[in-house]
Image 1 (cartoon, rainbow, N blue to C red):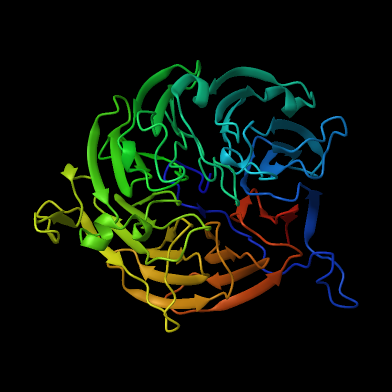
Image 2 (cartoon, rainbow, N blue to C red):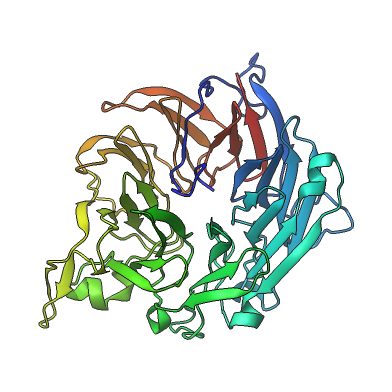
Length: 465
């Protein structure tokens, strides 16, 4: 998910990314035919899971509002698989709604957890708060059969109580991460109606990838969950030592030893002022995923899209420190004081002339020491990765939910209005192209094996010059 390695950095080193194309449909001008569309596939009406391309297969998360199997027409979230070569539909895993209505699983929501694929094994989280491991090897040789290796029900087995939200399932962006023979999962334990129903349930778990056995678990947020927990864990080596870094639902970014689960360091994305500490409606948590670049961590605070606007904060953090590495500590008098052990290298507090409040739902993308950081409101920032200095901004005039893609010295940004904006990766703003699709886009563009994949709410497009 969002990158070809464990860094979670959505950067491809391939060349030949397309700039010019035209999709068919209502936005085509008279006399303008579709071009450079290798294939397209109809999905459900709520498609949110970023495409994953592996071993000749393309995996996406969607809904069942346009059933592929007429025998399975009920409301459900769907993991769908297509053949990479020509877009032929091969397989789907259908996850019906949880009982209890939108309290746990919002109606018509698509699957928003991108799968992890290693060889013939695939792991993903679904709308039913389950972790599923499949053997997908048979699909590579044209056999529709697949084998369920194991399944964990986090509600039944771990006491997790998720909360459904209108946009995205309760596994929004909660994609599995791997390290050696282990995988790591955000459980999506949440707050509901002003309280946390299951404060003792874990927020982060580590499993044996082969058996599904729980190796360790953490419930650090406890009763302090602010709302939902939607981010994905980052697992990476820091100075040769495995760290699992997770933005959690109480507004703290925490790092754990990948093998033991011991807490290594933590960072509070909120300031220690009275409003930042006590007024929960103004506090940020994390929807995005941490990104690792040149031994630094980059992450922004925010909230899911149904909450009121609030001030965002993008931070660059040193992951080699230990303990509380927040920028401030409480001074005992209701204010904050500088933390001598702070791991904050720089922070960026976006300002806009229309006085919009800013928060992030997107991870950043970083290449050649340039950080591309979109906001939920559609403002795109280009910053210096070492200092946080801002080089340029662009107002897309539409919400941005997926992460940017950097490939072939170009930056791709998708918006809720269905636009894909293409910029040059440079210290000055150069807009190379802008393309309109038929429906909203809430996923990240993906480039693999010479093909650009763009997924709208209803269709998946494979684009190639």
